[in-house]
Length: 212
Image (cartoon, rainbow, N blue to C red; front, top):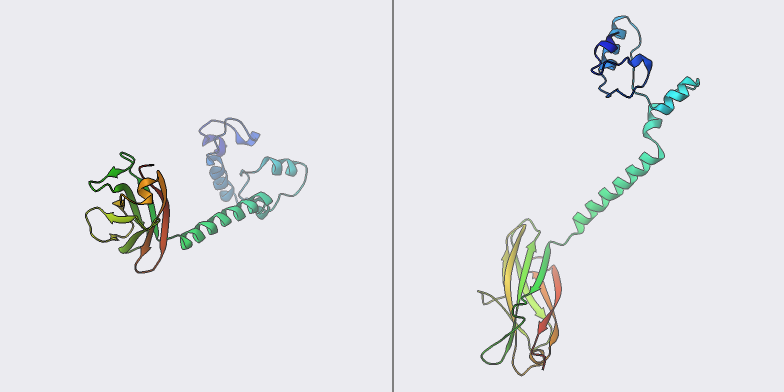
């Protein structure tokens, strides 16, 4: 009766599975203690799958524990999660240490300078994923008439601390008598290069002109 006395739901587990059971296992511990005291095998009360219980009632021997674990579904899940883990490790090793985003400033889309030149403004964000500070060289590729400068500096080298994103405002200017200034839109590509490792990344953008 020890199993009944310790049950918080007041049920008699000897009558089999019951809806009120909360699977707290107190009856199992109490029964095992009693069986140990009288020198009987433990496990008179235990967790069992309904399919195994049905098989035992029919006289079949219980399935080994390893058959409960090594089922086709569990093996498939293990292979799937192992594949996901390997993919994550592979992605970690091949990831680039440098990342860049380029966002054109839309208000206004361009500015007409005093000499008639057209200037576009871009917000460039550089992310250094490396474990130490790096010097990144920024450049543009497009129409030869386009020139680039960055706010508050005379050169195109940007120092980015380790695991940090640095935002830099970039100006691109087209002289008044040039195709990019006259056209509504011109293709433009921003390049960034790690001066130490030589690793490079780029982002495509556009240069907005007068649209003559």
